[in-house]
Image 1: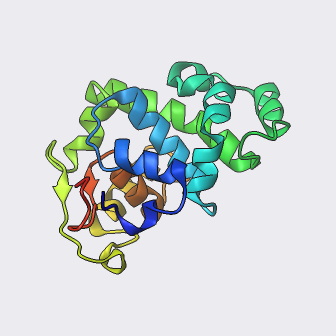
Image 2: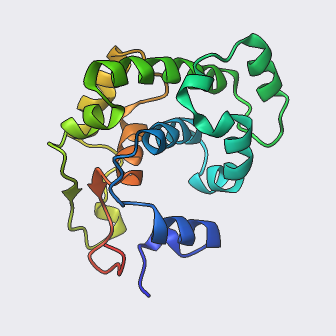
Length: 182
């Protein structure tokens, strides 16, 4: 099977590429989890996040927003002491902030999915790249969504992070034309 170039070096990346990346998701819980994970990934490799996935899910109560929104200083300190997670104080606190913002957006729009997918009228944008060099790190759409998320109180949602999130949850399909998983 032919895959996108980035997904051929490590089994975790290959599995993620083949089963999740670019698959449209309208599931609120998954959308929140992926937004948080993409924020954690900033400055790191995605493989680092994939390698820590099981531990991250356990440490962050499976990313249940209602639970994470209630985290306090004691929980943040416990996370900072956990070698299995990304130990960055700002990123750890941002998970709680983002859970609170997520709950507010979900209430306003009926669901987080309704909000996120409204930026593309509910349909994924399918690109037709022939080379990994053509795939952008951000776009006008990720700029717009990033600014709106920031306005609503989300943290670690710069345009590049948001573009990676859009790819991850299938809002944007950036599988190469030569990829059998497009």
